[in-house]
Length: 142
Image (tube, rainbow, N blue to C red; front, side, top):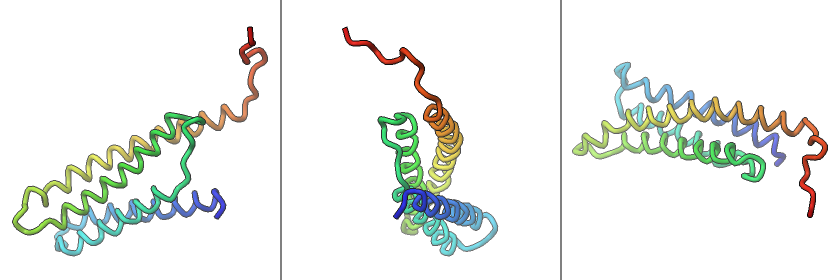
C-alpha cells in the first residue's frame, strides 16, 4: 500500500476513533449506563491504537523531534486504551474505576500538545526540504 494512502486511512481512523472516545467520555455524564459507555470508549481507543500503530513514521535522521512526537502519539493512544480498561474493573475496585477520568485527561492534554507541535515541526521540515543548501555549508576536509 502506498504511503500516502496509509496516511489517509490512519487519519480517518484516528478522527473517527477520537470522536468515539469523546462520545464515550461524555455518555456517563449524560446519564447513560456505564456498561454502554465503557464499550464505546474502548471501541474508540481501539481505533486510535490501530491508527497510531499503522501510520508511517518519520525516521529520526530526518527530524529527531518529530520522531519523538510520533512515539508520544503512540503512548497517548495507549493511555486512551488504559482509560477504557479502567472502566472494565470489577465492581469492588472503585479506585480503579474512578481512575479513568484523570488518565483520559492526561491523554487528551498529551494529544493536544502533540497535534500542535507536530504541525509546526512538519511545516519546518517541509520548508527545509524545499530550500537548497547554502554554498560553503559543507565542511572542508583538512
